[in-house]
Length: 121
Image (tube, rainbow, N blue to C red; front, side, top):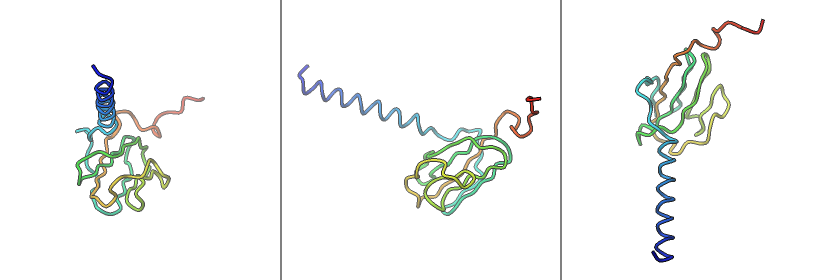
């Protein structure tokens, strides 16, 4: 193998690894999650239980953000192109803010933290 073909092979392999990381970083919305809000404007969701929210770009059919959420917390996207949780930035700016987006919610299979007994006594 010549030096130039070796370099080309390394570049090719590096690109393959980077592409794989991107796919793992942005998996699809799990089937257990339910769509709770859909719009091309500001979308807001207040969690009825602890769980996880997912923000999907419906135009590209691609999951772009997810985070854990507690009962009573509010997740919002659209007033800026950065998702917020209880009014505070919750991630990086989202690409393509003019697209239609959906929020999906997957409730936790555990009891809400607020309902758990306080074991500190």
